[in-house]
Image (cartoon, rainbow, N blue to C red):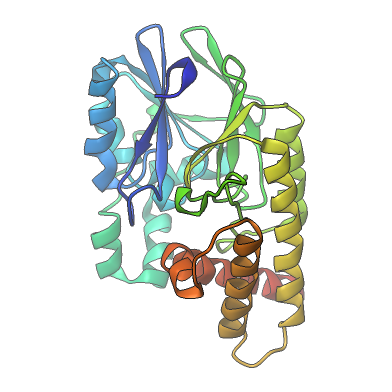
Length: 309
Protein backbone atom coordinates (compact mmCIF):
# COMPACT_ATOMS: atom_id res chain seq x y z
CA UNK A 1 0.00 0.00 0.00
CA UNK A 2 1.11 3.54 -0.81
CA UNK A 3 0.31 6.62 1.29
CA UNK A 4 -3.25 7.99 1.47
CA UNK A 5 -4.94 4.60 1.25
CA UNK A 6 -3.83 3.86 -2.33
CA UNK A 7 -3.33 0.18 -3.19
CA UNK A 8 -1.66 -1.08 -6.38
CA UNK A 9 -3.20 -4.23 -7.86
CA UNK A 10 -1.34 -6.39 -10.37
CA UNK A 11 -4.14 -7.45 -12.73
CA UNK A 12 -2.15 -10.46 -13.95
CA UNK A 13 -2.51 -9.50 -17.60
CA UNK A 14 0.34 -10.70 -19.86
CA UNK A 15 3.09 -10.92 -17.20
CA UNK A 16 3.72 -9.86 -13.59
CA UNK A 17 4.12 -6.11 -13.06
CA UNK A 18 2.82 -5.28 -16.53
CA UNK A 19 -0.75 -4.07 -15.97
CA UNK A 20 -1.98 -2.29 -12.84
CA UNK A 21 -5.29 -1.21 -11.40
CA UNK A 22 -5.72 0.78 -8.21
CA UNK A 23 -7.91 0.84 -5.12
CA UNK A 24 -8.35 4.07 -3.17
CA UNK A 25 -9.75 3.62 0.35
CA UNK A 26 -11.40 6.47 2.24
CA UNK A 27 -13.43 6.18 5.44
CA UNK A 28 -14.23 2.51 4.95
CA UNK A 29 -15.27 2.89 1.31
CA UNK A 30 -13.41 2.26 -1.92
CA UNK A 31 -12.98 3.38 -5.50
CA UNK A 32 -11.29 1.24 -8.12
CA UNK A 33 -9.40 2.94 -10.94
CA UNK A 34 -9.28 0.59 -13.93
CA UNK A 35 -9.83 -3.13 -13.55
CA UNK A 36 -7.92 -5.25 -16.07
CA UNK A 37 -9.68 -8.12 -17.84
CA UNK A 38 -12.34 -10.62 -16.79
CA UNK A 39 -9.52 -12.80 -15.49
CA UNK A 40 -8.43 -9.96 -13.19
CA UNK A 41 -11.69 -9.89 -11.19
CA UNK A 42 -10.49 -12.35 -8.49
CA UNK A 43 -7.42 -10.17 -7.93
CA UNK A 44 -9.59 -7.06 -7.62
CA UNK A 45 -11.79 -8.76 -5.02
CA UNK A 46 -8.73 -10.07 -3.17
CA UNK A 47 -7.40 -6.50 -2.97
CA UNK A 48 -10.65 -5.48 -1.28
CA UNK A 49 -10.28 -8.26 1.24
CA UNK A 50 -6.67 -7.27 1.93
CA UNK A 51 -7.84 -3.70 2.56
CA UNK A 52 -10.52 -4.87 4.99
CA UNK A 53 -13.42 -4.02 2.66
CA UNK A 54 -16.34 -5.99 1.29
CA UNK A 55 -17.68 -5.66 -2.28
CA UNK A 56 -20.63 -3.61 -1.03
CA UNK A 57 -18.20 -0.99 0.30
CA UNK A 58 -17.04 -0.04 -3.23
CA UNK A 59 -18.74 3.14 -4.42
CA UNK A 60 -16.99 3.64 -7.75
CA UNK A 61 -15.19 1.98 -10.64
CA UNK A 62 -13.48 4.77 -12.61
CA UNK A 63 -11.99 3.94 -16.02
CA UNK A 64 -9.16 5.95 -17.52
CA UNK A 65 -10.15 4.58 -20.94
CA UNK A 66 -11.86 1.54 -22.38
CA UNK A 67 -8.98 -0.37 -23.97
CA UNK A 68 -9.48 -3.97 -22.91
CA UNK A 69 -6.38 -4.35 -20.75
CA UNK A 70 -7.81 -1.55 -18.58
CA UNK A 71 -11.56 -2.04 -18.83
CA UNK A 72 -12.29 -5.48 -20.30
CA UNK A 73 -13.34 -6.86 -16.91
CA UNK A 74 -15.61 -3.94 -16.00
CA UNK A 75 -18.88 -5.79 -16.57
CA UNK A 76 -17.85 -8.84 -14.56
CA UNK A 77 -16.45 -6.72 -11.75
CA UNK A 78 -19.51 -4.46 -11.57
CA UNK A 79 -21.68 -7.57 -11.22
CA UNK A 80 -19.77 -8.27 -7.98
CA UNK A 81 -20.06 -4.70 -6.64
CA UNK A 82 -23.72 -4.12 -5.77
CA UNK A 83 -23.43 -0.45 -4.79
CA UNK A 84 -20.85 0.81 -7.29
CA UNK A 85 -21.30 3.20 -10.19
CA UNK A 86 -19.03 3.03 -13.24
CA UNK A 87 -17.48 6.31 -14.40
CA UNK A 88 -16.10 6.65 -17.93
CA UNK A 89 -15.35 9.33 -20.50
CA UNK A 90 -18.43 10.16 -22.62
CA UNK A 91 -16.79 8.64 -25.71
CA UNK A 92 -16.13 5.39 -23.83
CA UNK A 93 -19.16 4.99 -21.59
CA UNK A 94 -21.42 3.68 -24.36
CA UNK A 95 -18.98 0.84 -25.03
CA UNK A 96 -19.38 -0.34 -21.44
CA UNK A 97 -23.15 -0.47 -21.87
CA UNK A 98 -22.88 -2.23 -25.22
CA UNK A 99 -19.40 -3.71 -25.69
CA UNK A 100 -20.16 -5.37 -29.04
CA UNK A 101 -18.16 -2.84 -31.06
CA UNK A 102 -15.17 -3.16 -28.71
CA UNK A 103 -15.27 -6.92 -29.12
CA UNK A 104 -15.68 -6.79 -32.89
CA UNK A 105 -12.87 -4.29 -33.36
CA UNK A 106 -10.40 -6.17 -31.18
CA UNK A 107 -11.41 -9.56 -32.61
CA UNK A 108 -10.72 -8.28 -36.13
CA UNK A 109 -7.14 -7.57 -35.05
CA UNK A 110 -6.39 -10.46 -32.68
CA UNK A 111 -8.87 -13.19 -33.64
CA UNK A 112 -11.69 -14.75 -31.66
CA UNK A 113 -9.54 -17.44 -30.03
CA UNK A 114 -6.99 -14.95 -28.70
CA UNK A 115 -9.75 -12.66 -27.44
CA UNK A 116 -11.38 -15.45 -25.46
CA UNK A 117 -8.04 -16.57 -24.05
CA UNK A 118 -6.68 -13.14 -23.10
CA UNK A 119 -9.82 -11.19 -22.18
CA UNK A 120 -12.91 -13.39 -21.92
CA UNK A 121 -16.32 -12.42 -23.29
CA UNK A 122 -17.23 -8.82 -22.43
CA UNK A 123 -20.21 -8.37 -20.14
CA UNK A 124 -22.41 -5.26 -20.53
CA UNK A 125 -22.86 -2.86 -17.62
CA UNK A 126 -26.46 -1.75 -17.02
CA UNK A 127 -26.95 1.77 -18.38
CA UNK A 128 -28.37 3.05 -15.11
CA UNK A 129 -25.07 2.22 -13.39
CA UNK A 130 -22.89 4.16 -15.86
CA UNK A 131 -21.95 7.84 -15.43
CA UNK A 132 -20.41 9.86 -18.27
CA UNK A 133 -17.62 11.97 -16.80
CA UNK A 134 -17.28 15.13 -18.85
CA UNK A 135 -14.05 17.08 -18.39
CA UNK A 136 -13.95 18.41 -14.83
CA UNK A 137 -16.37 15.88 -13.39
CA UNK A 138 -15.65 15.25 -9.70
CA UNK A 139 -16.14 11.81 -8.19
CA UNK A 140 -16.93 12.14 -4.48
CA UNK A 141 -15.36 9.29 -2.49
CA UNK A 142 -16.61 9.95 1.04
CA UNK A 143 -15.73 13.63 0.76
CA UNK A 144 -12.44 12.96 -1.07
CA UNK A 145 -12.62 14.61 -4.52
CA UNK A 146 -11.29 12.68 -7.52
CA UNK A 147 -11.15 15.01 -10.52
CA UNK A 148 -11.65 13.59 -14.02
CA UNK A 149 -9.54 15.41 -16.64
CA UNK A 150 -9.81 14.84 -20.37
CA UNK A 151 -6.35 13.80 -21.58
CA UNK A 152 -6.40 12.73 -25.25
CA UNK A 153 -3.34 11.78 -27.27
CA UNK A 154 -3.26 8.06 -26.56
CA UNK A 155 -7.03 7.76 -27.08
CA UNK A 156 -9.82 10.26 -27.65
CA UNK A 157 -11.80 8.67 -24.81
CA UNK A 158 -9.00 9.01 -22.26
CA UNK A 159 -9.21 10.73 -18.90
CA UNK A 160 -6.74 10.99 -16.05
CA UNK A 161 -7.83 11.15 -12.41
CA UNK A 162 -6.36 13.74 -10.05
CA UNK A 163 -6.51 12.86 -6.37
CA UNK A 164 -6.24 16.21 -4.61
CA UNK A 165 -5.83 14.64 -1.16
CA UNK A 166 -2.78 12.64 -2.21
CA UNK A 167 -1.59 15.13 -4.85
CA UNK A 168 -1.16 12.35 -7.42
CA UNK A 169 -2.54 11.54 -10.87
CA UNK A 170 -3.78 8.19 -12.12
CA UNK A 171 -2.67 8.54 -15.69
CA UNK A 172 -3.82 5.44 -17.57
CA UNK A 173 -1.58 5.50 -20.66
CA UNK A 174 -1.25 9.28 -21.07
CA UNK A 175 1.96 9.52 -19.05
CA UNK A 176 3.60 6.60 -20.82
CA UNK A 177 4.90 3.19 -19.75
CA UNK A 178 7.50 2.54 -17.09
CA UNK A 179 8.27 -1.08 -16.30
CA UNK A 180 10.08 -1.68 -13.05
CA UNK A 181 12.56 -4.10 -14.66
CA UNK A 182 14.10 -1.10 -16.46
CA UNK A 183 14.66 0.97 -13.32
CA UNK A 184 18.28 1.94 -12.64
CA UNK A 185 20.14 4.15 -10.18
CA UNK A 186 18.93 7.02 -12.39
CA UNK A 187 15.33 6.14 -11.53
CA UNK A 188 12.46 4.95 -13.73
CA UNK A 189 12.80 4.57 -17.50
CA UNK A 190 9.75 5.80 -19.38
CA UNK A 191 8.46 5.77 -22.96
CA UNK A 192 5.24 6.85 -24.68
CA UNK A 193 2.61 4.45 -25.95
CA UNK A 194 1.21 5.08 -29.43
CA UNK A 195 -1.12 2.08 -29.47
CA UNK A 196 -3.57 2.22 -32.41
CA UNK A 197 -5.81 3.79 -33.43
CA UNK A 198 -6.02 7.32 -31.99
CA UNK A 199 -2.44 8.47 -31.37
CA UNK A 200 -2.16 12.26 -31.67
CA UNK A 201 1.26 13.69 -30.74
CA UNK A 202 0.06 17.29 -30.43
CA UNK A 203 -2.77 16.28 -28.10
CA UNK A 204 -0.46 14.00 -26.11
CA UNK A 205 2.01 16.82 -25.49
CA UNK A 206 -0.86 19.04 -24.34
CA UNK A 207 -2.21 16.35 -22.00
CA UNK A 208 1.20 15.84 -20.39
CA UNK A 209 1.47 19.59 -19.87
CA UNK A 210 -2.01 19.65 -18.33
CA UNK A 211 -1.07 17.01 -15.78
CA UNK A 212 2.22 18.71 -14.95
CA UNK A 213 0.39 21.98 -14.25
CA UNK A 214 -1.24 20.25 -11.26
CA UNK A 215 2.24 19.83 -9.73
CA UNK A 216 1.61 16.22 -8.67
CA UNK A 217 3.99 14.48 -6.30
CA UNK A 218 3.71 11.21 -8.24
CA UNK A 219 2.00 9.53 -11.16
CA UNK A 220 0.29 6.15 -10.96
CA UNK A 221 0.72 4.44 -14.34
CA UNK A 222 -1.28 1.49 -15.57
CA UNK A 223 1.99 0.08 -16.94
CA UNK A 224 3.30 0.02 -14.17
CA UNK A 225 2.88 1.50 -10.72
CA UNK A 226 3.90 4.70 -8.95
CA UNK A 227 6.65 6.92 -10.36
CA UNK A 228 8.06 10.12 -8.95
CA UNK A 229 10.57 12.65 -10.43
CA UNK A 230 7.59 13.72 -12.51
CA UNK A 231 9.18 16.70 -14.29
CA UNK A 232 12.17 14.67 -15.47
CA UNK A 233 9.96 11.86 -16.73
CA UNK A 234 7.76 14.34 -18.58
CA UNK A 235 10.81 15.71 -20.36
CA UNK A 236 11.88 12.18 -21.32
CA UNK A 237 8.39 11.52 -22.68
CA UNK A 238 8.38 14.71 -24.73
CA UNK A 239 11.73 13.87 -26.30
CA UNK A 240 10.64 10.34 -27.15
CA UNK A 241 7.29 11.40 -28.61
CA UNK A 242 9.14 13.72 -30.98
CA UNK A 243 11.77 11.07 -31.79
CA UNK A 244 9.09 8.47 -32.54
CA UNK A 245 7.18 10.86 -34.76
CA UNK A 246 10.41 11.68 -36.63
CA UNK A 247 11.06 7.95 -37.18
CA UNK A 248 7.53 7.45 -38.50
CA UNK A 249 7.79 10.38 -40.89
CA UNK A 250 11.20 9.29 -42.17
CA UNK A 251 9.91 5.79 -42.93
CA UNK A 252 6.53 6.77 -44.34
CA UNK A 253 7.35 5.60 -47.86
CA UNK A 254 9.66 2.76 -46.87
CA UNK A 255 9.01 -0.73 -48.22
CA UNK A 256 8.00 -3.05 -45.38
CA UNK A 257 7.16 0.09 -43.40
CA UNK A 258 5.86 -1.73 -40.32
CA UNK A 259 8.99 -3.88 -39.95
CA UNK A 260 11.25 -0.90 -40.58
CA UNK A 261 9.49 1.09 -37.86
CA UNK A 262 9.69 -1.80 -35.41
CA UNK A 263 13.43 -2.08 -35.97
CA UNK A 264 13.96 1.68 -35.63
CA UNK A 265 11.87 1.87 -32.44
CA UNK A 266 13.76 -1.04 -30.89
CA UNK A 267 17.06 0.71 -31.65
CA UNK A 268 15.76 3.99 -30.21
CA UNK A 269 14.54 2.36 -26.99
CA UNK A 270 17.75 0.37 -26.54
CA UNK A 271 19.88 3.49 -27.02
CA UNK A 272 17.78 5.44 -24.51
CA UNK A 273 17.78 2.56 -22.01
CA UNK A 274 21.58 2.29 -22.19
CA UNK A 275 21.91 6.05 -21.67
CA UNK A 276 19.69 5.55 -18.63
CA UNK A 277 22.17 3.01 -17.24
CA UNK A 278 20.35 -0.20 -18.12
CA UNK A 279 22.86 -2.85 -19.19
CA UNK A 280 20.72 -5.42 -20.99
CA UNK A 281 20.89 -6.57 -24.61
CA UNK A 282 18.47 -5.91 -27.45
CA UNK A 283 16.99 -9.38 -27.00
CA UNK A 284 16.50 -8.77 -23.29
CA UNK A 285 14.87 -5.43 -24.02
CA UNK A 286 12.46 -7.02 -26.49
CA UNK A 287 11.37 -9.56 -23.88
CA UNK A 288 10.08 -6.55 -21.91
CA UNK A 289 9.10 -4.20 -24.72
CA UNK A 290 8.37 -6.47 -27.69
CA UNK A 291 4.59 -6.04 -27.44
CA UNK A 292 4.97 -2.29 -27.08
CA UNK A 293 7.32 -2.05 -30.05
CA UNK A 294 4.74 -3.90 -32.16
CA UNK A 295 1.79 -1.80 -30.98
CA UNK A 296 3.67 1.49 -31.15
CA UNK A 297 4.72 0.79 -34.73
CA UNK A 298 1.12 -0.07 -35.61
CA UNK A 299 -0.15 3.12 -33.98
CA UNK A 300 2.39 5.29 -35.75
CA UNK A 301 1.43 3.65 -39.04
CA UNK A 302 -2.26 4.42 -38.46
CA UNK A 303 -1.33 8.02 -37.58
CA UNK A 304 0.66 8.39 -40.80
CA UNK A 305 -2.20 7.01 -42.89
CA UNK A 306 -4.79 9.22 -41.20
CA UNK A 307 -2.70 12.28 -42.04
CA UNK A 308 -2.83 11.31 -45.72
CA UNK A 309 -6.60 10.94 -45.73
